Length: 286
Image (cartoon, rainbow, N blue to C red; front, side, top):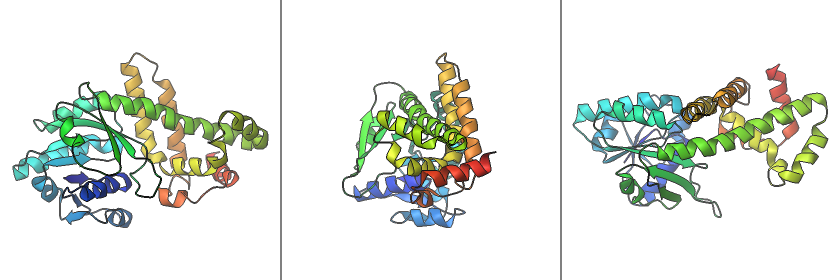
């Protein structure tokens, strides 16, 4: 298996597959020191062509906007090496984008996939990360051993797994944006305490950890921007107004430009003070 690319999610997926007995390759040439550190436990090769040329399966795990370019790079590497791997796209993209990727891959078989939840975590008590798969060869990916995945194969065509992601992410990331705007406006109006008291009645498990939740969400804001646009395209294709999620893209775009948006998730995870998080956003959001 080749992982493109071994960021936080891709590397965690790869390590689990390696534990399950799969040889897992990745290339980190030109990537940051953070990515190099995250790729520990994977077999590193010099180029994408080296990884794709040796692989039976290629997993694409990249930010949504990069998915078409990565598909083109995989197709190029396969042509250059004479390889014909099964490609599983696990990115947060619209079903219409899945169709586009199939054309870009030009003869390479595509499994449509999506990930619900954070990177697979070996810590005791953590729930498995759920992965949805769709397409004629989805079962081949599902059969690969991984100790920390809950894999669900859907009966529909390619695009079905991505449709699930677009619907669930619209709630998860949309809720984060709503909490962010609600608490930021309350903070600016000087009424944060009664607002949190009121929201706790409906969200007793979420409000106590809201500072960390919003800091982590802010650290991923750059990725969320294009994900919101993919959700908007999905809703537009379903005959629904896309403007709600084009607006959400604007929200996350502004957050991405703040110091919180520049943090790596590892740095944001230690931020628990909601007042401090909102103060940082307020200082840079006017």
